Image (tube, rainbow, N blue to C red; front, side, top):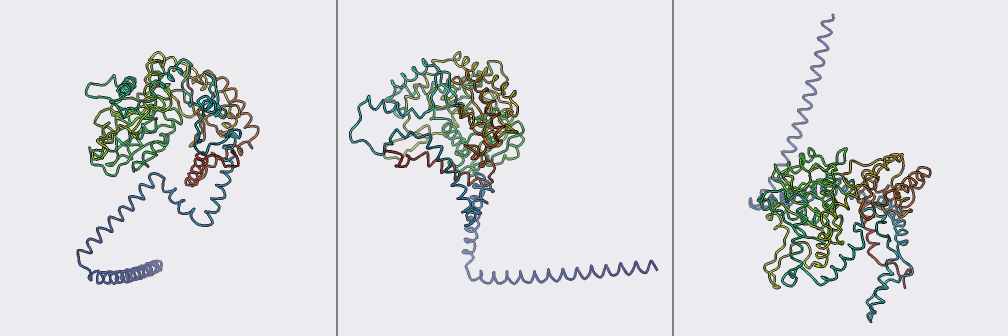
Length: 576
């Protein structure tokens, strides 16, 4: 019957289930006995040692394991686990051979580029001359070396950024002041109190345009001068790390930045042994505060925002990021190296600028370059802090040196007082009206460039740039090949990646040439569109490879080799 058949089927299934359970139990019992045997044997062997030895070995083992895991975690935070994976894989003989072969191909192209830059008619000097040269001849030789440099007239620069100062009168003033203080060194403040006071005045003037004048009296914005944006960033990171160690006892510091943050933050993490969290930007190429929140923890010492970011010229949401950092008792740095002497005046001209300076609650430090839109000579920057309590951790003091009591406010010991004096003169000579006029010229050029790029088929602007740093990308033509074509027309753009793009940073020195740039840009796009093969020439294949290769270590090797080439004199067969 149907009922009988069903009963038989159920019985068979039950028997199979019981049989399976029995097999499983037997396997488990076998494994238990084996593990017990192993443990009994281990305990018997360990029993031969004193308990103190076992405890000590356990402690040491756990310490070494923890240290190894921490080291791996820190390396992964700086390079990524993918980097570590490829670092192991590419050491295999066959893979290593392939990697070296491809690396040599790229280096051949780089050598060609560097040879073009070398002047075959100018012999390399490889040893100190036995007799000094007359002053006139020395000057002539120095001037002759400029033949290989890019040249421009006032207001005719074709460089993205790079050349900021414009106007012969201003340039001559800066040079005259520099010459007057050529011996000065603020390390010896008792000898040159003038440059010490000038530095303090530069810091105060810079702070006054970055929100310090809007603060209550209990917030005392202060700072110091450095040699450039990278040193300002290094100082701010070091001071924030040590301040947070003092305040919270953090011994394993971590820092949060966007992938668009300046490369100096990677350098700071490497220098100061800080675990780095590099976050992807959102669809507007901004650091998202909600993403930052996910990475905040008890070891976070610093969160970084950019105003604007160097690649795309966009301003992060400083209000939300700084507010979040403050709520957790964490430092927040705003990198304003590019925009410090531009954004305040862009805002005064009526353009929309998100809040970004010390007027934002929670901002604890800022970096800004006077040698960019401050129109001071190269080698000057300012790092600012919301409180002297943080700044004091930037300083290095040595009290047991046989050379006496020593304290230094920045990375350097001796510093060129002539640069401080020249920077001071630049700020005084231009004043707010001078910076307003320069910014007006820059923003007119920026509006013109944005409109022109939008009218060129195949190009689009990256994000929503706030000032004169405009990034351009394309989904229709190889943007790196377009950049190479622009170089053929004398233009020097900054090449970007993630996504592939380049930017042109408008300054007072190049603002009047935007129409010419747009004309050449349109020609370059049309040329590359007609001849896609141009993507395999010049720097285009190098950047294309760098963007596509998953092994970032291979790209690092190429960069190191290129830097090595630039840091050597040409081979002897190219010199006399």
